[in-house]
Length: 115
Length: 110
Image (cartoon, rainbow over all chains, first blue to last red; front, side, top):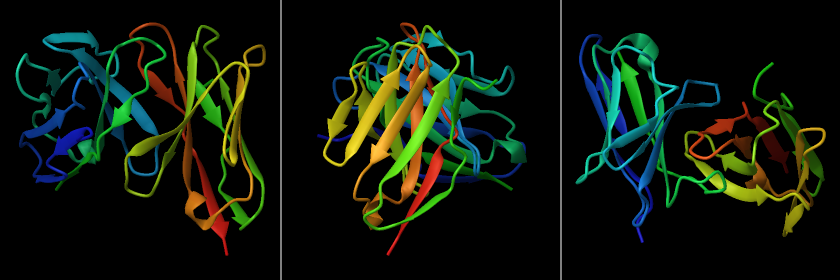
């Protein structure tokens, strides 16, 4: 019974490159959330997706960031033209439904380092 | 005012001590509340949900006061393994994201 899976666990990119972070939700979960945690700070919501739909992207930066959750395959968080300030831990969470009382289960995170 | 605020910490307590964490939230429409713990460089893990009547799970007790928009977590007989950052989490309306507090770091000392 695998939990939420994220890969890669660590990603190093140079400024201007693209970063692709992948998240496979727990089996039976159709709701995915992405969060960012800067060093020594709390988690900040980025985006909430269901299969093929973005439900809430109010936490996503307007430029360079995008997310998708296709019908088949993992959810992808894509960061174009990375800058040093993008260095952070990116956590994905999933839940079986989208109700307010649904517990979210987190993956191990991807630690992005931009050189 | 931040949406979710927590005791700034850190809390350094000896083994066996009782420690309490406080959390306040600003959105009166919030519907569900959780405590998560996060170990250094790990993902947050659910510790317990917080119910209106308060709830207890072993050494951990959570309380919710909707009128004051306040949540608490009490840890009794603290263990070394309780050392972590404790995150207060509030969820709003349907489809709303979790809003995390900044966390309170606990160190239980031998």
